[in-house]
Length: 125
Image: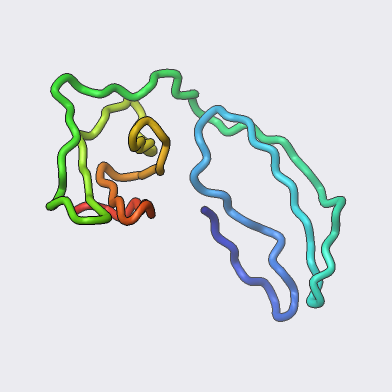
């Protein structure tokens, strides 16, 4: 999600690069500090920032003929599914996976592993 660079010995860095933000959205940041024994501040500085760029107003599209299929054989307590990728003018960030109408997980690829009611978004090859 972000990166930190180390300053001199014994002193925490006061910079952090936040990755994965979306364009033209407002984010609120707050920073708290801790010492070596685990004491934390509770009144750290805050800032509200809006990223540059154009907000994505267009939802992803599922193409006609899209389908879900088994990626492998069905087992006693697990299976792996894969599906046709959706399209988007900016890019598809993630998928929501439902089992019997109930949300069971999210995935950032177009494959999903289901095992003994434990769900994983490991990529399907």
